[in-house]
Image 1 (cartoon, rainbow, N blue to C red):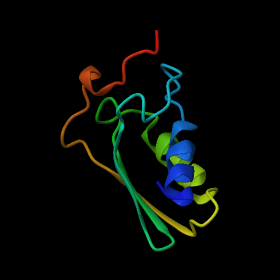
Image 2 (cartoon, rainbow, N blue to C red; image 1 turned 90 degrees about the horizontal axis):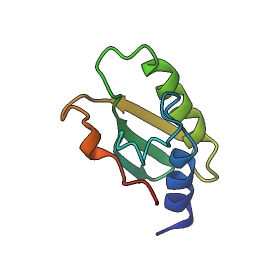
Image 3 (tube, helix red, strand yellow; image 1 turned 135 degrees about the vertical axis):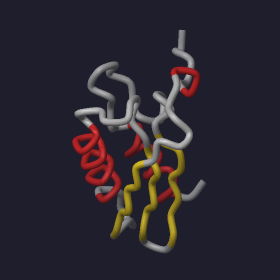
Length: 94
């Protein structure tokens, strides 16, 4: 894993779902995260379509990604296909 890719994962783990307090990767809400040159492309979802926190979460992901050294641009795309389900969540560490 490159330093930028590790930074991207760390940045995404720093964005938390305010309802659960778990990061978006642990929640299974990040569908794809890739780096193309100096741009990061992230596809994410929310736990429900029409979630009132959608824009806050999207902006949080964008800000976190843009703070990663080496990333100069970010494209954050929302998708509800496939729909999020609790089965997407990482197991709790205990």
